[in-house]
Length: 121
Image (cartoon, rainbow, N blue to C red):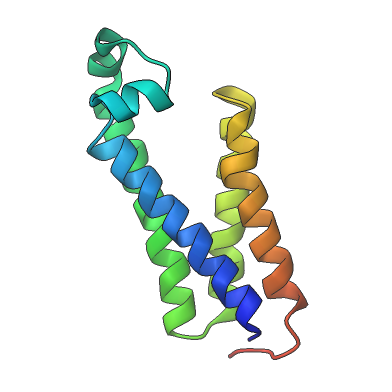
């Protein structure tokens, strides 16, 4: 698989590990409050939901990395599609910038993986 596709999948996985950290560990911290434009009260009220969301982002990252380790292109495609759908839904329902931070990187990585000439089994 071309290096650009591998790097794109790694980047998307790294983004989702970052989302996991923000949502599970920094939601109520100054960084989380600033990034998500929340008051401490809003963050406290939604912390459990954010942690759950962070865990799901971790599963997306794990699936992408697993697809790279086992060299299964179909696994990478599946998890990239999950990332894109989650990004589209999040952009529509929560915050439009999610289109750029989640859906777009996932779509670019998916295109690179699909365009790779070497079919990885």
